[in-house]
Image 1 (cartoon, helix red, strand yellow):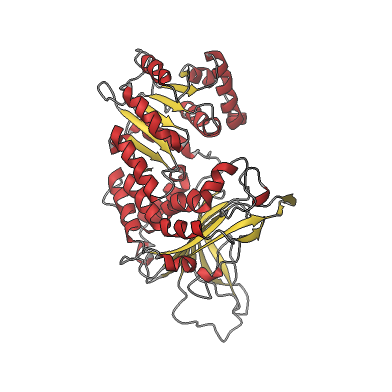
Image 2: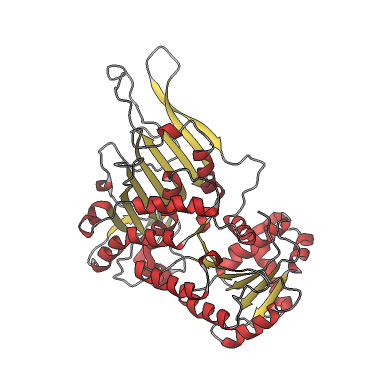
Length: 493
């Protein structure tokens, strides 16, 4: 797919996402000469800046991220693409003048609108863009990129979709999940479908269980208002981690085109066994971080953070157990967890294989008979690791765990930010790494019973010390031999 020249219109261009992700990503695409000639970037902001002030701000954004890789010559070329449009997105005048600007001949009529704004503003902004005929595809395509959250629950997601579909066709909507742009996440597909050796084993006959973990050592920073109304289940599990689950467990698509790929992901979500409300406590657990130590420093508990009510029962840790009721995965538990202020920051997928049918070494000195694991490190360590039991050198029959490592990136290869990939895909019209609405809808169906149960249980929430691996939730596990895998190095249990 070739990228076409485009006008990127960024709503919320002076905000945090633009500062730390969007502007640096667009700059790096220009460094790599992947932005087609004629591509322009229109920044919309309320601040009364002129063009010169915007260029200074954009340079600061890019320099802060690029650091030593910043190139003044490339930024000069990049700055010629930049245009600042001052306006209040709640006022009709902003859109009338925007339509006038975008109608000028120096702007490509292929236009992508990036809504880096509050979800509450999605509807009004789309309405005014539509009123000014900015979604009309008479002389070029129109695409709209929407950041999560896509609704607050199933009902609100469906209501948001009804409003979006009033103005746009599904093919014009790019629901972005930056997790899917991470190189290692895409490598999961390559690992599964380009290597035949594991495919015969990738099923209920050989796999004992699957774990997906996203842990963060940071707290909620200044996001108290948002986080207290969202919580860990909405913020991470419903979106990012369910997406990882679909990639690990989906059937091979008939091709790698966007619709075939997304069809298989939806089939997985549809196959997940619903959690009845009476089973919520057996299949989901929540917790909230209390005071503790991170890297030797004392940190506050969640209830002491800014803009958090003293009686809040919002979860900063959430875990759940799911089953996929299809031929391949029937009976295999899938455990997922996410948390703030945990022992370390990492995203991993850990696949535990069954023990051999006979323990041949039970009468020997063998102490540590771990099952085989396939470990997929998403971040910060990007790796694929297969753990096997081998004999130690020497006269005794002692064993140890050895691992086969496949590093994702060579030491001389630079990391690419997920947003670079995704912003380029919008130019190409490649929707394979963006979410279709039925994916979003079925993900909400999975977590809605948990959210509804937790919403009415406001008397108590378990706590865990900041800097730990979360609260004690071992009751989720189907067997005593199952445990949370918190390391990419061998663990003897």
